[in-house]
Length: 100
Image 1 (cartoon, rainbow, N blue to C red):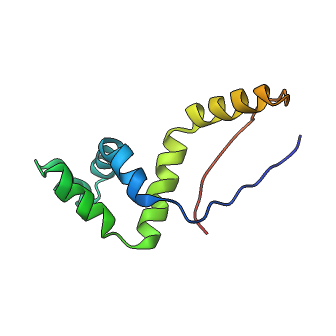
Image 2 (cartoon, rainbow, N blue to C red):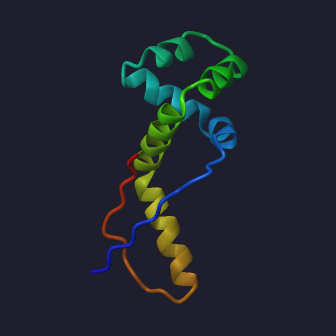
């Protein structure tokens, strides 16, 4: 077994918010986060984006980790497929995102 660790920096949170707004809203709502309640109570998408953009860096990092972990199987499949095309025949055993 080989362990590969990747650190992400300088994420484009604006694009992530725009692309994953429904998933972020649902995640925050289901977790009981007060921001999620605000977002799911008929708030327009533009106001919701503004609320998410105003979060602290730590909150944005945690939401990104939640999003990555929630899409883990899709990310693993994409990584395996991409590596397969480059000649790396492997299976990703696990993946997990966390903040430091």
